[in-house]
Amino acid sequence: MQIDRELDLKGEVCPFTFVKSKLIIEQMDKGQVLRVILDYKPSVENVPKSMEMEGQEVLAVNQIGENLWEVLVRKVK
Amino acid sequence: MKLLLIMASNPYSADFNTLVKFARAGLKRNDKVSIFFMANGTYCLLHDDVKKLAEEGAKIYYCAHNANQRKIEPQPWAESSSMYGLSKLISENEKVISLS
Image 1 (cartoon, rainbow over the protein chains, first blue to last red):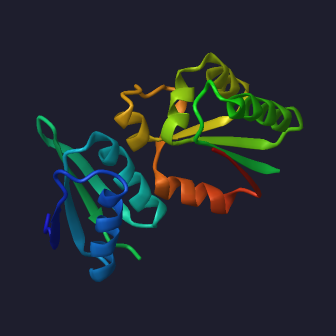
Image 2 (cartoon, helix red, strand yellow):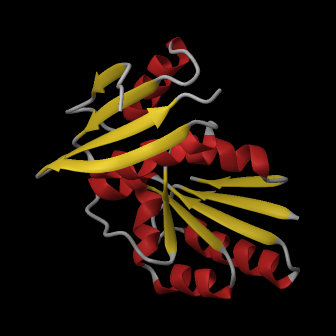
C-alpha cells in the first residue's frame, strides 16, 4: 500500500492526536493515505473513531511495537 | 426526545444525585438518554448507579483520555470517546445539560 503522508505523534495525547491528524488530512488529496503513529492507547481507540465520524476511511489499526500503533486512513472527503 | 447529560463532577457531589435523577426521569418518559463523563466525572464510572443506568437503557460515553489519566479501567457497558465525540453528541441531541 502506498503511504502518501506520515505523521509521528509519539508523545502526544488527546485531543492533539486527532487535531493534528485532521489538520494533515485536510491538506491531502482525496484517495491519498495517511499513516499516523501513536503511542497513547486512548488515542489508538479514538483517532480512528473520530476519523470515521469525519467521513474518512480507516484502512487499518496495527500494533507495530510494545506500545506503538499505526493507523492508516484514506481521505474520502 | 434526545437528551445528553454531560458530567464533569465527581460521584460524591450533589451533581451526581442530580445526574441520576435526570437520567431516570428521561428514561421513564422514553427519552433517548446519553451521558458523557469527563474530567473528574469519569470517577462516576466506578459507581454502581451508573452501571444500573446503562442497564436501564442510558448510553454511556466517557473521555478515554480523562479516564486514563485517573487510571480508571474501561467498562464494557461504557463507550470510549473523546472531545471530538462529545462535540458530535452535542450536535446530535435536542437537549444538553452540563453538570460541573
